[in-house]
Amino acid sequence: AQTVTQSQPEMSVQEAETVTLSCTYDTSESDYYLFWYKQPPSRQMILVIRQEAYKQQNATENRFSVNFQKAAKSFSLKISDSQLGDAAMYFCAYTNTGNQFYFGTGTSLTVIP
Amino acid sequence: DVKVTQSSRYLVKRTGEKVFLECVQDMDHENMFWYRQDPGLGLRLIYFSYDVKMKEKGDIPEGYSVSREKKERFSLILESASTNQTSMYLCASSPEGSSYNSPLHFGNGTRLTVT
Image (tube, rainbow over all chains, first blue to last red; front, side, top):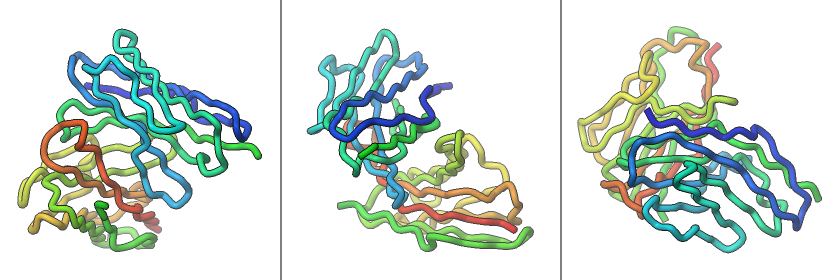
């Protein structure tokens, strides 16, 4: 079975600084999709960024970028110029079928003013 | 924007009660999902449905059932609520297929407390 591991239950970052959240996964598939979701205190899960496994180029969305290392099965999220609104739980997720999504246990990010 | 609406934000029920959690999506998505979210455990899939009247068990289906009579509505049923079902429940939907453009769209969650 596929597993997704987030080894950092909590992280903190100073406002305007950069932080990297880690995610590793286990799969025997060669084609799959990876996602980072953000869950603020409002509880609404929001898609932050996504990556297709067969694309070598790392995805970027404004201040959010990923470091996708397929061989190492690693998918980390980098948040640049951190803002107070970035404070949230962040979940890494994997799917290869679109029917079954596997989530990590989450990383709680605190942004320090 | 896709809207996934869960009927209750907070719910308090007694042990042994039958509990219905309702979820409605407005984007004609084929797939709908029920997740349970607990601290330190992340999101765990209870059931999902890829079509009307179709359902598949997820990782933790015990104690739960689901109903999908219409495409836009997916209900989670706790036949006899127990205290260990106290949790946050998240509904999600996605269009058919596994592609870059098929991420999950989530509702706001229902925090259920069973006393």
